[in-house]
Image 1: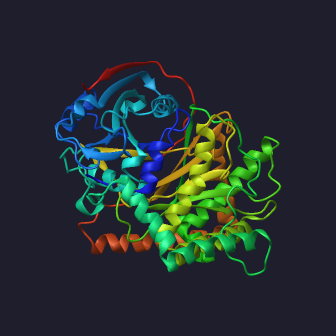
Image 2: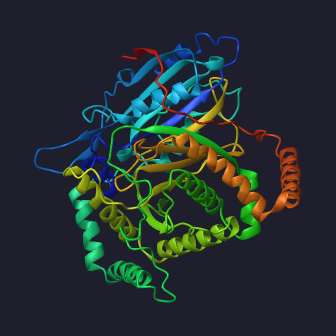
Length: 504
């Protein structure tokens, strides 16, 4: 049977009503005018023809005297997992986001298949939305992007209807290792405790963290967990969620990166840090030291399941200008990369499980104020470099809806669609009220960062060069899809009126 990684196991064992491990895409389609009225029903019928494949055909097996494991269900009935919802037209994007939040807040039934799909119509302009709610324990963010990439076509002429729950491409499926979770955990601990190199890895990580905390010159370790996290964005854990979106232009982010030696992820973090500083200042909660972010990192040569490290590091110090803030963040992310390169997968996965498991256990025993790991989590699991379609309908948005893990109350997850970086802000509204403001500030902060680093004239030249290069590439690759920007927007917590049906 498919083996659970240590992090997979933690996601099942540490889940609570306040911290469900649900992730999934929110895909919004713009159906052609012809056939738009019954598009949602036809799409649902076509997708229901597709059987569930790995990992979407897995059930959780929980023996009384053994650790949980996953097993394929040979008789998986997808019709019981697929549901239809009609908002009272015309439903706005805010209505859609509110509906998705309510669906996202509840835990999945672990006795059934570990996902659900909701097909939603009644939206403004005749648009149709699909929200795929899936347990994070069976798939990581990068695997989900691969699943969606297989699901959505790259051409409007490709009318084959696939489904989110189709089997992942062979290279993306978890290895069918026939080993129990106990054996895998035992093996992991044996490697850490019994292999000198791996043990030294762990000790070196901890030693560098301690030296950095003491202010020793030249220490390049991570920040000590739980220490130095500002009191911003704090509150009691709650099942309630709020959802908002923003977008940034990939071409301009790359231009900033090229000018400063930064990655797109560094540029994203700088814009988010600036937006958070403005947001907190307006609320009278300005931090007196750098905010701390947690960042999931996919590990190279991973063996399947959630093979990730989630590491913490500070963002820019209060009062820094945009360019200086970006430089400070670039230095911190370089340290994170250095730690990953010098450490084994087993070491950083165990470190991740322990650091994030302790806050989850604290909440699980009833202390809802928890133990802060970071002020927010920021995840960037790749995306789609071209336009996408489903049953001939263009994809207007392919938006991430993720997890707010223990020790944090705000998750920011990004997915690329064509030339836009779509940013999803998922928050506990008691701690991050009016999250749509923060989403808007992120776009405005990026404009400020762009002007500070490039200046308007330099930016115009760079963007023109990028456009020319893309035109040349399109001419030499006639089969490649044409790339044009996609839109995204933000959602709030307005309660929609709706009718609900089921695919069962």
